[in-house]
Image (cartoon, rainbow, N blue to C red; front, side, top):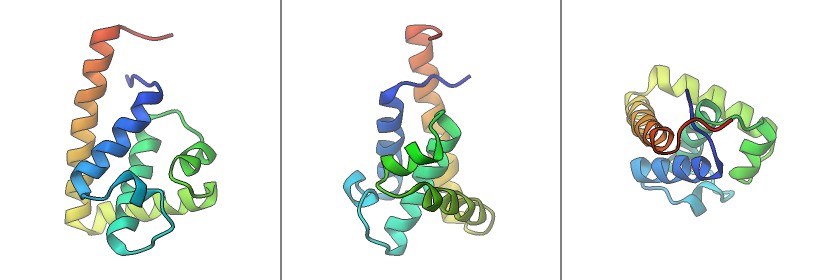
Length: 112
């Protein structure tokens, strides 16, 4: 079970920033260098996995359109399969987020 509130989005962006060294401002920028682009893909993958946000909302969170968010998740899936550094970042960030979200759920109980 995933616990979601607005803070979850911030936690995901902050976790990606922690694991990649890319700031949230850089992720939301139009810059397309590999480091920033990969961090953005990782954030999109995690936002899709841990939130009920639509593609439009995920795109809006990172200042991109919904079709770019959709393409980014496909690229992230490919990187998880082919790039060990990206895969490790994804797995480590996922573990940390799961711990954060489990703790949040334990502290507040289920939110219906």
